Amino acid sequence: MIVDDHPFLRDGVRAMIEVQPDLTVVAEACSGTEAIRLYAEHLPDIVLMDLQMPGMNGVEAITRIRTVSPDARIIVLTTYSGDAQALKALRAGAMGYLLKSSLRTELLDAIRSVHAGGKHLNAAVATDIALNAVGDPLSDREVSVLALAAIGSSNRQIGARLGVSEETIKSHMKTIFQKLDAVDRTHAVALAARRGLIEL
Image (cartoon, rainbow, N blue to C red; front, top):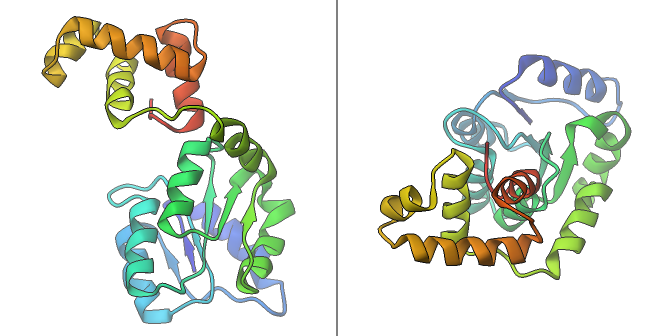
C-alpha cells in the first residue's frame, strides 16, 4: 500500500512496483486516516508511508496501524533526512526509512528486505543518527523554545508564551547552543530544522 498525499509520487512508485513480477500495489491512500482504514481492509504485506500529510501525519498513522497490527511492516518515504524525524518513525514501529530522492536506487531492495523481516535505513540518515546519538538530546521544553524562536519571537515573548521568565529562556538558549554546537539563534534554528527537531 502506498500512502502519500501527492498523486504524482504515488503514480511513480506504483509504476516502479507494478513491473516487478513478485510485487503488486493493493491500495493507495492520500492521508493517515485513509491509510488506517485501507490497511484494515487490505492487510498489505508492506506499507510505504509518507511522514508529512494533511491531518494525521505519518508517525501517528504508523503508531495507530502498529497498535492494531503489531506485525505491520512499514517503510517511510520522505524528503526529510533529519535524524529526529527518522527516530520518531522508527520508534513508532517503521521498519525502513527511505528518502524520496533515493527511491529509484533503494525502493525495491528496501521492500524485499523489510518483507523478509529485515530493516532498511538510508545510509545518509543512518550516519546522521549515529553522529547525533552521542550528543545530548534537546528536552521537549528546549524544542518548544526553539520553535518559538524560529517564528521570530524574542526571549521575552517566548517566556511570556511559556509562562517563565526571560532569564529562564536565556538559560534555555545557552543550553540549546551548547547541545547543537550552534553559534547563535539563527544557526540553532537552521540546525534543528535540518535534523527535523522543528518545522519551519
